Each structure stands twice: as C-alpha cells, then as structure tokens.
Amino acid sequence: MTTPRIIKKYPNRRLYDTEISSYITLEEVRQLVLDDEEFEVRDAKTGENLTRSVLLQIISEYEERGQPMFTTKLLSQIIRFYGDSLQGFMGGYLERSLQIFLDQQQQFRSQLSNILGQTPWSMLNDLTERNMDMWKSLQQGFLTSAANSMRHTHPDPAKAKKDPKS
Image (cartoon, rainbow, N blue to C red):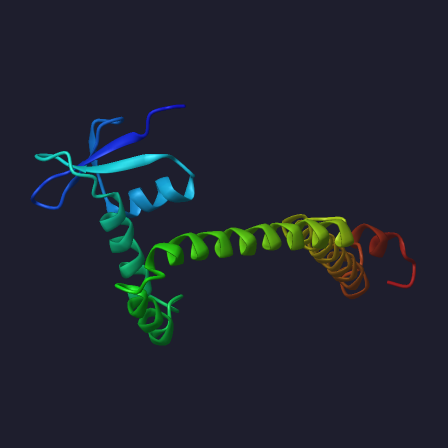
C-alpha cells in the first residue's frame, strides 16, 4: 500500500503539497480527487487530519455555483441524523448507495456503448467527418459551377481570334 500524498494546511489557509513542493489551490485539491489520487490534508503545526474539512469546503464552494447537488430538504434530513442513534449507520449507507449508483451508471454507459457500437465521442467524430465531407463537396460543387459560369460569360480570348464570326 502506498502512502498518501501529504498536503499541509497553514494558518493563513494556504495549502502546501509536499510531493511537488509547491502551494496549491482548492481547485487543484479537487483535481486530485478527480484523478483518484490518495492524499491527506494535515494541519502544518499540529499534524491534525483536516482532509474532511477541506473536502467539505470544496463541496460547499461547488454548491454555491451552478446547480446544487444537495437540496435544502436533503441537507435538513442529513442534519437530523446528527445525534440520532442511526448517525453511525448513515455514512456507510450513503457511501454504499452512491457506489451502487456509480456501478449502475457505468453499467448503463457500457450497455449504451454496446448498443450504439460507439462511444458518444466517436459518434460525434464520425458526424463531424461526414459534415466536413459534405462541406468539401458543397465547396467543390460551388467552385466548379463558378468556373463553368466564368467560362460562359467570359469566353477564352484565344478562341475568339480563331472564330471567323468575330
């Protein structure tokens, strides 16, 4: 088992990634999560594990932007579990429920890919290539028509000299 990447949090709220020896932002911590990188955020002075509070801070910031994932009703229900006899059970339940949801989502994507025979990106690429081919054909047709039109309205001057009617 590899040791987690350590990020130190200083009193000025700055985060220092010890692996790359540089300060990082919350957005970069979020990217570590997205990359499935194992890490811990530790208080620089005390060594206390602050990972959960930093993750909650990231969630809070994203809840403020765009379309929130957690409704007021859902948050109220979660708060009601604090101090309840089922509080310890709730975290594991939510974690397992989310994992089942993610597994079903992956299965759905896999089935959709099998049905379509392609990923959405490859379908989009194919559509783009077809559109480009049609665009090139349209341009070629236009250029050919324009060239033919030019020949009819402006006859070749060399032919005009040879033509006895002129």
